Image (cartoon, helix red, strand yellow):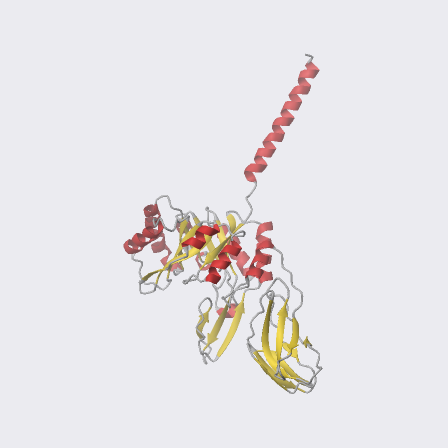
Length: 409
């Protein structure tokens, strides 16, 4: 074989070797797609919840299921998930134990024993244990000691925790995050209610800061819900109602909602500029048909998949029977929950009307209109009556919206 032939073969061999090295390097550094978990926070498992679990299993990597809670007085409660539904969903279950952040002292021995018992319950296999403890920042060293003890007792069962943005400024955070196998950073409902439920810009800042502290995989907990905040006459907060409705009788109330479009923008931003260690999202909480303060299931699916169809809302008169008043109805034909219109104008000639479900009637110089006062968003693919009106025969059924409903943003 000639020297030229040998040199040609040698060059080809180097080219192949370099190409293989580049492929291997790319594979080594390629990141897995961001995945989606969902919190199941309901204490009671209803048919509606079971239906949501089965309808969402194609989107979900893991369920994060509330199974126990330690109250502020130390009382320990356990909840009974529907094991058959979880098994049928074909997705692993991370079992969550919530500890009230106002608990004065952690009973380490008692809590560790109870949590290990939950982890070893063969009737509900635990893919991992998660501790949800919103402790004050000053208590992080004590919490770290508790987690070390729990981690040892759990053996091979992975341990996860939820984390608060308020901990990021603490010198004790790195020691805390070194103990569990993973963490979930909560970026919703962590500020005063006056600041709203979810601020995308603030959340992204927290996420970037948190990524610089942890050396373990982490997820970001994103909201799918709204809350009703009630205020006393002196301006102090009376109650916050979310998954459990209290209907507190304050002097005033406001409805806070997480915008599906704003939340999706955060998902897109994190996918495009992925912080080190971020592996996915944990959605709080899994929507159900009976959860009036969560997004509709269709909207959540749209946010997760990035398919958000938002045609304008429609308002119409639905004639009553035998001369009865007509219902004033809003209709959302799109795939995303919509903010309620500020007002709906009734046709001339409608002489008597009233509003319901967050709407009141106003008399204007030209007629009547229904005006929103704490009206709820309209779920995707849904209709809702917001009032009634007496109108002459032949009145057009299509109504005008003075301020058209728009996607929650």
